Length: 331
Ligand SMILES: Cc1cc2nc3c(=O)[nH]c(=O)nc-3n(C[C@H](O)[C@H](O)[C@H](O)COP(=O)(O)O)c2cc1C
Image (cartoon, rainbow, N blue to C red; front, side, top):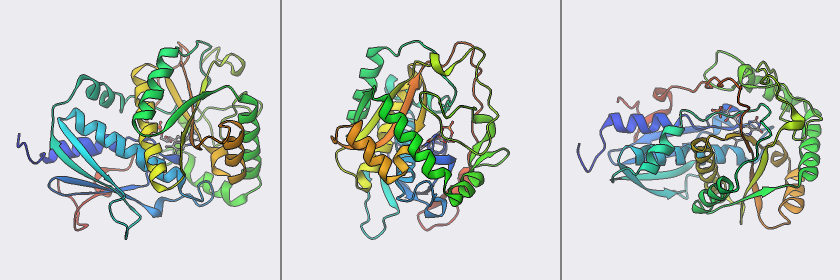
């Protein structure tokens, strides 16, 4: 091993893990450029969701998650990272430049990286088992390390009202439906949310799920909305600029991967944060105006008899990675 420059197999493996990152509607809104000792992350504006995500917040969060996945993957492969976020004021799509330095992996780096291929968005009902306080504390610490605040909320009435109102707003928007049909409920595509990963749910559920175009994932036998012991975690930042959203993505990744290590299922709920009025409502009523909500995460134990979920597809590395000149990366 060359201690100054990682070999292409290492870079390939680490970016391969970053590409497993969850993203809004599985849009995978990222591109990567690789130099000898640096990797650069770019936002791909061509993968925007103008109806669901008009201010690109979910896109930035998704890229922040991919950035953290990359950091985790490299650390497990014995490469520490120095991240320069938003390094180029003339190019707002250049989200991060990641410098690499040799550094031995810790057991924690390895367990987080091993969680990446195992993590799934689980939209089914969860069991009634409570989430241990020690796990909630550990997740809050992970979020704090990434400069964000993770709080558990029991303001379910307010959350339900926000989710319901956002869904009602979207239901009246025909362009939102066209976009949703383009990106969700499909099978056999390298992007978008497959119908096989979408569980049917009811708008009367204590925490109604986003209504996707088509749902074919069965609920586990005996699982019921009224016995679902999910916690809802609110991840927030003190400000609401591009940097805050990128950091919120990194924190979301840290929380999701740690939850996976702890055996817990997770599901993002962002519809109420995509509509300005309902996002303001969540900020005022769930966070008492103490920060900007960036992500709502449902967390809990999947029922004991729940089948493993299929992995959602991803685009291939060769479509997404170039060298520093924008030419195909030949690794
Ligand atoms: C920023 C962001 C917002 C998301 N919002 C929702 C949501 O509102 N409802 C939902 O069911 N899934 C949501 N997801 C989950 C994605 O649909 C999921 O990550 C993607 O389909 C890939 O599947 P996987 O997470 O199982 O790998 C969101 C993910 C991200 C990163």
